[in-house]
Image (cartoon, rainbow over the protein chains, first blue to last red):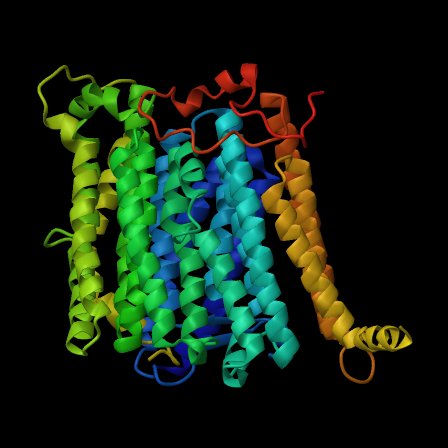
Length: 494
Length: 142
């Protein structure tokens, strides 16, 4: 890399945090123009992230050296707060930007009420800024703060419609989130008490498999699992994600949940790596199988379109848990897991956006009475189906590549002689079948004979954005090699 | 008797007292959060858990020789600020929910698993009758 790049990259990292915060503050201060500021801000942040990724990939070959770290205000660790950028955070930053931009464009059409617009945009921009900070933060306590920024704005977004169901769902979501954050914070405190530092890199160098680390690992992982709605701590997800406005559900299911998962992965690859034993891996994998089966069954019997999608998030996150034992056998498998999470986030966000358009058109989302609108809106149903195909993992979609690689890792486990390997392979393959069942359940009415009715008119954004995002999700397979190579630029990872 | 008292006093050195006390508060708060239904009590329970975390953190700060670690104290202050804003937000939600439903408890369960049920955007239905399952003793009718 050239010296100019080396100077630009840290400035780009600090600038991204500054820019996304500035946009959020501006929209909060000037709510009357919040949607204009939001749109410009979304474009600016997306452009910035893409530029940053080009810069990052240019600086590529020295992946063996440390991640790019920025000491804010010139205060170095252990006292200062460090920002850090590596392949993992870069990939998820790009994902956040793509889904964020799509959601912003969709919201131009979806949130048209003047009052609602003033409330939606600032909160959404804070959520986005919080996610960007979460992905860039390299300090355990700062991670807690960013988690709180993300969850408080997410809760407020869930409550946005102000109905009793929405406020109640938001309340449940808030209690769960605060509990998860406090559990995480207790773990941070224990680590700080043991080692006296909060910086992730310094912590990683100092940890060994002691009792304090074990306790901290349990507390932090449990807290984050609660926030990521990982089975069996998932019960809050469907009421919260199902009752939120469509763009909010898309962001919650696509990005917020993925953010908590990112943190779990980051911690277990770094600070808690000495604690990972095969028994622990198998335990987590069994939870994953439970999530796959339970979430899929709930999705099969749910009566509302958005509930089906919400329960499918629980099921799909089961894959991420099943991947833990695979990672212990084949350390390289973690990149496949992240790729799967990326494809899932893209597909899930577009399914939720398409469901939002259908709900808007019909005035409800009861699947039993949705047939007319499903037949009357082929474009939206196509988006729903295309993203659904990616969720199932049919060939040529991003989901196919992700599941294929996952299956390959699973077969590797079987070859390595693990009895449980068979179970993982069965779960990965069977989960795809179950996904096919509930996706087909959503689109099936459009193939039946009957009246076609486009329902209430909606803005073109609501028609085209889900389709665009679903196309991105389906084509993500083409970017598979690029993503996996970017992820390889994570130092310290196996 | 005096032997027991001595042991207790010995165990209550700041090095052990604060972490033990903090862990106890954390556990008590968690119990309250799970057992209580009234939302204000639940929020209080979360605050008790938070106090437990801060107590452990302050115990960490005071450990060892010399003056307490200022970093831990700064973290505690930041944590308190976050806790206060989260509590204020939660209380705001409770007030709003109470206005809508007449009760400071959450609606029972996910409202969505049954095809026959009314869709959730018509949540006002609940506003007339309150939640389907009236809460236990903690929520006396006003």
